[in-house]
Every structure is written in C-alpha cells, then in structure tokens.
Length: 402
Image (cartoon, rainbow, N blue to C red):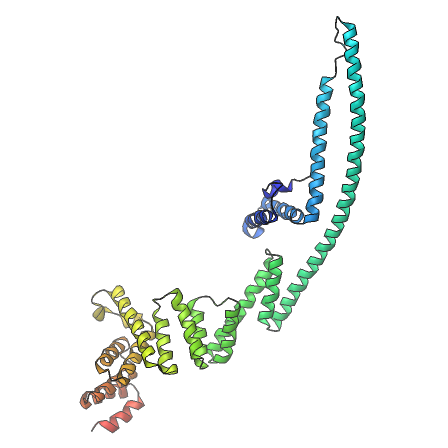
C-alpha cells in the first residue's frame, strides 16, 4: 500500500490547505511540460496526482487512513508474535529441579493458551473490520468513480462551450468558460492554449481595426482586453487612449494616459498626449501648458543624457521619433495663442531642429514673426513652408507679403 503522506511530503495530521500546497508545489515541479521526456518524473507526477485525489477527498482519506492503520496494526502483531516465539523454552534444556521446571512449563502453556485465544479474538475483530473497510472502500471507490466521471464530463462541456464561443467570436464568453475550467483544473494545458489564442485574436482584431482607422471597433476590442485584465504594456494603453480620444471620450482617454504615468512618471509620450487632449479636446489651455511643459522638460533632460552638454549641436534628429516634433510644435502653437511669443519662438526653433523638412514648423514660425510685427521675417518663413508644399502659407504670403 502506497504511503500517500510520504509521497506528498506531509504529516498524517496535515490540514487540507497544507495538502493542497504540497500538491501544487510537486505538480509544478514534476509536470511533463517542465520535465520533458523524463519517464521517472512522469511516473512520480502520476503518484502525486493519485495521492492528492485521495487525501483531498474527506471520505476517501478516512477510508485510506483506516486501512493504513490496520496495516500498521498487522505489522505490530507480527512483531509481537515473533517476540513471544523467541521466549518459548527449548526442549533439550535440562534442569536439576524438575518440579520447578514443570511448574514453569505449566505456566508457559497456560500463557500460550490464553495468547492463542486472544489472537483468535483479535483475528476475528480484525477480519470483521477488514470486511467493513473493504465494503466501505468499494462503495467509496464506486461513488468516487461516479464523481470523477461527472467532473470529466463537466470539464469537457466547459471546454467544448469555450471552443464554440471562440468560433462565433464571443471572446469574453470563451474566456469565462476557460477560467472556470482552469479554476477546477489548474494544470489543463489545452485550456491555457485556447485562452492564449482567444487573447491573441482580440489583440490582432484591435490592432487591425486601429490601423484601418476604425476607432470605434478598435475601442470595443481594447476595452475587452481591459476587462479581461489582458491590456498589458504601455503600447496597448496608448492605443486604448487614442481610441477613446478619437471617440470624443476625452476624460477617459486622459485616465488611460495617467495610468501609464502611475507606472512610469517620466514617460514623455504620456505627458504629451495628456497635454494634447487638454489642448485640442477639452480646451483647457492651462492644463495643456502644464503637461506640455512636463513633456518638454523630460525631453530636454533626455537629450542632455543621450548627447551630453553639446546636445543642441550633436543631436541627431533622425534618431528621435516624430512625437518630439509634435510636442514642440503644439507647445509653440499654444504659447502663440497665449501671446507668449518668446517661448513660442523657443519651442518652434526646437521643432525646426527636429524636423527641418516639415512645412508646418516654418508656417508657425512665420505666424509668430507676424504677431511680433516682423512681416519680412514672416514672409521668409512662409516662403520656406510654400517650398515644402504648404498651401496655408501660400495664402498667408498673398495676404501679408508685397
């Protein structure tokens, strides 16, 4: 008879929690996915499962404990009988005092008779208990097999339902069925594989919709990932924020970007996007200026760290994303609208350093010069914008330049 307590490495008095904890530890250690083709590990994994199935079930554990104690009693009885046999007097031994020998022999045989009677009674008691245990074990085994069959059917129905919901693109329904299955059977590899496929499909559909400009549909998928706690990584959160922004859900978009800042307060893009929503969506210029300032300060610190003290000279614009240009050009537009022309020039100059071949920077630069009353410089800037194909600058030049 296998010692299930020894297999799981727990004492006979272990609590259900301790038994479950030991099982999980050993199941992870000896699972075939980890041990590969190790035959011994695979066999031990089966023993661990067998031990847990018995010890985790109160009725089966009780029957197992009775049977185990009975075997221990049997072993002790064998040892006791062996010790009695060892005391039996040797026939060839002689003594000079025959009377004492006869009395001793009489006492010995009386004791042997009593021991035989006791042994017979004990045997009958043990036999009765054995029949009771056997009957109980047979009934318990039958009931357990019935329960196991029901559980197998239940698990199969959950998996089948998850597959069906996956085929009809009811992704959240499929994940719900799979999560229920995995709660009941944590080592179900097929369920994990199917869940991964479902999550991957949601992500692919979200990306495809976003790339096609179908922001409303993309939002549905990104929110689905969010509800399933699968919206991992700042890139997906940026996408969700952009979808919300495109739908005019500005506060919700800001909330997504702020979640990124909760994890990484120095994320330039998150600061910029919050400022942009406040500037273009909410129309709160003070909040927009606050977050634009945060983003530009972090950007300048990044340039200094990456390129050293002479960053304005050695900085390579091609190494920086277009986001940096957008940050400074929108910050320049904001300051221009507020009449802060000096700061507007500073930001616009940075935009032109970062993207000297984009007409928008020269258009805004010309507008700033116009506000300063420097029409000649404004016309020169607009001329550069026109050379890069900007039609708005062409209109400005016709209106203000002679």
